Image (cartoon, rainbow, N blue to C red; front, top):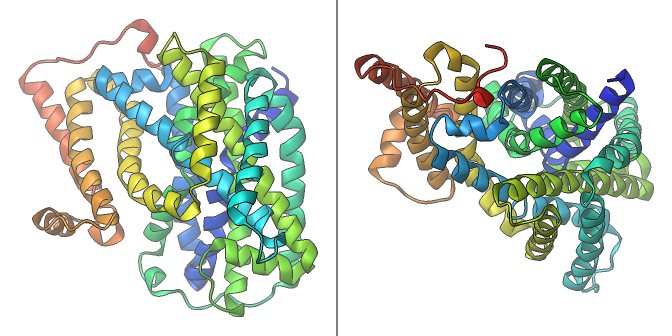
Amino acid sequence: MRKRDTLVIGLMLFSMFFGAGNLIFPPFLGALSGTSYWLAMAGFIVTAVGLPFAVLLAISLVKGGVQTIGNRVHPVFSTVFMVIVYLSIGPFLAIPRNATVAFEMGVTPFLDKSTNLALVLFLYTAVFFLLVYVISLNPSKMEKYMGRWITPVLLLAMVVLCTAGFAQLDAPLQSPAAAYESGAFFKGFLEGYNTMDALASLAFGIVILTAVKQKGVKEEKQLTKYTLKAAMIAGVLLALVYVSLGLIGGKMAANGTFENGTAILSSAATLLFGQSGTALLGFIFTLACFTTVVGLTAACGQYFSDLVPKASYKAVVLAVTIVGFTLSNLGLSQILKVSVPFLVTAYPLTIVLVVLTFFSRYFQHSRKVYGSAMLFTGVFAAIDGLTTFGLDLGPLQTMRDFLPLSSVGLQWIVPAVVGTLVGLALGKLGGSSSAKETEGAEMKAS
């Protein structure tokens, strides 16, 4: 495969990852972390860049991809977990979130106060999802549309905004907010969950592997090689954008208090370019959110059409766009209300599953290890998610608070380790009931 093809696929992957959350959260982190910025941003990059890269690596190393990885816990778990992930990062959460943010940043600033927002949102999302549907119908051309055309334009717009910000914003970093005075790295680590990119990697893996295969790459090691090269390109670009947006947020903190990252970017764009800045920022948000929605729609289409053979790719894409369109008209606040508790629950499970994948051959892919680790992790991740949602769990919540690292939101780590050790012990005592997988599910690197 030519270097140019690898670059284009890497740009396509970047555009699929780079959506609403990727724009919103870094500047807010920068504003709140202040002089603790670099520690906080390091933690953010671990989960917003490093973890998605690790997920893609794990998927590329295992024949059968993420479905096979999940099967190592149990086939039922694999299907249920992946269906929940696809529905969440697809039509029920990430897709409507991106469409709504694109509207709020690209259209709302130019409307009069007397405008019927509900009607305009309806019309905007109708056109938005019609375009998503048309482009998603042909995954083979996504590389052309997104990698060669849309992403370079998006990156150019980002360069203009960030360069102007570095040149004109010279305020020093402020004192960190209370949440970042101690444990800034871990706070940034948890904030990286909000990009949803690790979960998106579970879906995007199949899209990237398909794009590489369409370039004539068939041999397994070569598939892994080129997939990782494309992921490296996307990862470096994401990290550079995060650092740049975070620094803009840190410098803008001297200009007042902001409710969220969108308010920071809106104020910065207006300060730097006047009314033209609002248009530039709206353009950036629209392109970023659109490419992410296209990527997620295509990923859902490929997954569910494979899972349910009677459902064609086109039918799934149509269903995803209709559901995404419908939920987008509920408004952003309702969508975000559900997202954080879900992410707090899903991310620990994803992290543990990926870590186990890298060491799987050392314990013969034992289902006892996978099952025990995921059970222990899942219980405490669910407790954390329900607590985040606002439920008072009484003794369960007290038990959670006693766990090591609970003060930094990582109380699931010790249960995950304990669960893994329990699984290893059960494997030793009961003999190797390892789930010997078919040849198509073995690690390529073994």
